[in-house]
Image (cartoon, rainbow, N blue to C red; front, side, top):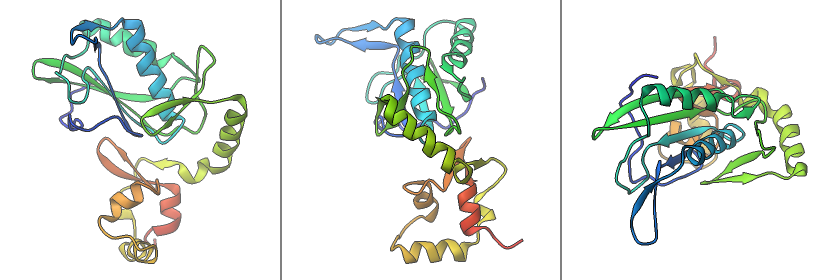
Length: 218
């Protein structure tokens, strides 16, 4: 783990690409109590798997939107064990990056996962897909369709980690924007809704489909 300055804005709610996971819960009377480590583990593992099966995303552990920041549990050794166990929580294992940061005297952990070329299933047999702010369980029929679709489309969705926005021809990008009637920031539009650009360690990287469509001439 290493420190990194950029964390989501606290007011940002759970979404397709972001999940806040608190180590505490608030009861009906407003009191606060610690969640069990098992419950927290399941919440993080489930969401990482669901995001990997969809468009990737970030799990921020140790805080909740619009709630007091309380941080994560345990010392450094316990947190490392927690992370190691997460790597084995799904089949096949999910690759993720994790960074820690001290904010307001509390330790937060940020997990980032990219879209995966394979489908990841929890050890209890459930397979989930991130849809908006929810992790939706898949039936056997929907799982079969997802696997077939993933096999057919993954090549175009593959992320090229050494690529950058500068690899694209700005004229081709602008032509695309104009033809579809889009205005504003082209990078943001290509990121969502089109999924042609993703972010790796806070920098834009291209999918193979973006290169096919907009790459500069060699």
